[in-house]
Image 1: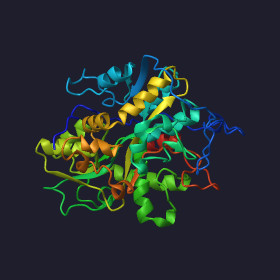
Image 2: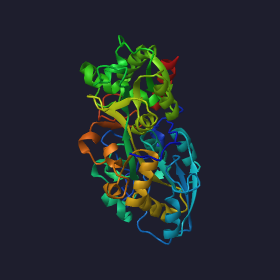
Image 3: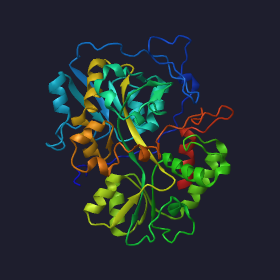
Image 4: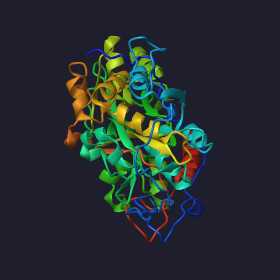
Length: 406
């Protein structure tokens, strides 16, 4: 398989302690006309905002806030361009600004300057709660009908059945190992958490507070008495247990990574032989001759599913909707998923993607997808539905991550 995504550094840096305060989650007795204001199964209430009822004339431009690699116009690589066809087809000039962290995206959306944003699951609920994005009328997005059903109506992109965006692409956080060193091949995340591991000092982990969910997922499967049912819904005791596990792991870590190139290099030199990875990193490492393999461990894994969302203060909403329809069209979705290194959201993209791409990224494999716990913002309202306890939020996780790393 050939892949074009060799310069992309996808960073989910430690976010500032931003929480979903109840004051930001306005409620209303008026359900509105198909707008927001719904309450999720976890008790999270979204602000009551209207959504676009019908498309009007394109405004001539659209301000796009995107992860690098999600809105390419040929300036990075002349052969990588799905923005220009959009502009020619719609008459909407695409003004693209990229961001490098979810926290940066959250803050930029507060300015009201952007019409549409590609939001990861650790940012989407914060944007919804703050009223910076609005409900999306998927009837106005023809290509939405083709999107995999298992990516729709999820905790990070919908509230009470109301979509707040269009799924774009998804992927898993896998366990990578050097085949010539790690024997036998691992089958469990226990390989990176076992204090007696013979690979201590050569284990790597993702550098972000959201990595706490990886520890929570492991505990959920191996210490059922903790009562963890959702790795992003941790009460104080459950968070403490995850933090304790990660503090014990700390002495075995060779490096916490956020730059994929650094992980490729570490596995190439042998400084790291075991740890969390993405499929695209596996591909790059193999292309460079490093004898690595990656698995989805028996516990499942965390992962990401990114969503295009419309700004509530957007001045170019018609063009924003046209962009969302374009980005999940078969041609554009195939191009971006190959360049970025992930599974496309539209199965029809697999018909035009390079041979083997969708198989490599397990696109459309529902059994695979159901084993993933996609990044979701931890909030006080427990995402597992508990109402008799207050869960820890991302601010708590950020503070805990600082303590873990020391």
